Length: 121
Image (cartoon, rainbow, N blue to C red; front, side, top):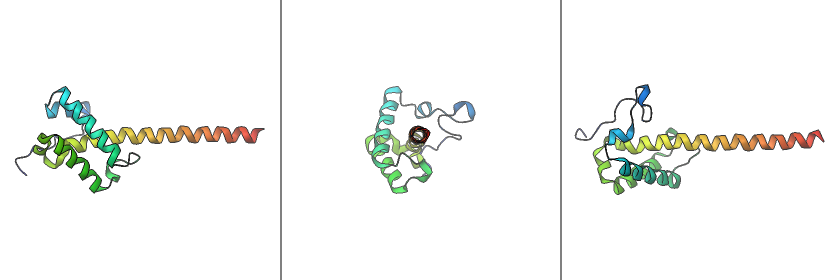
């Protein structure tokens, strides 16, 4: 739809590298942006697989997160393809999936240490 707000060029969260600051692009104010982030984070944890990046998510699940966000924050309907929500999803999943893998590596290393101690006896 040509009346909707297009996504800026670059990647959200990367203003110094040719990207943009999502909060500034929305111009909603700090409190409204924080509410949106909290809402999207809860929807992500409920509807998406936090061990996977955005590109590996089920499309219907991503659509559900967008639809829920638009229903809660009506102004999101003015943005082309729900790009502010998808930007938040991308940033949140990048963080959450890295935490999941980091915890897995730590757990695997703890198991390896225990096994080594058992063999060293």
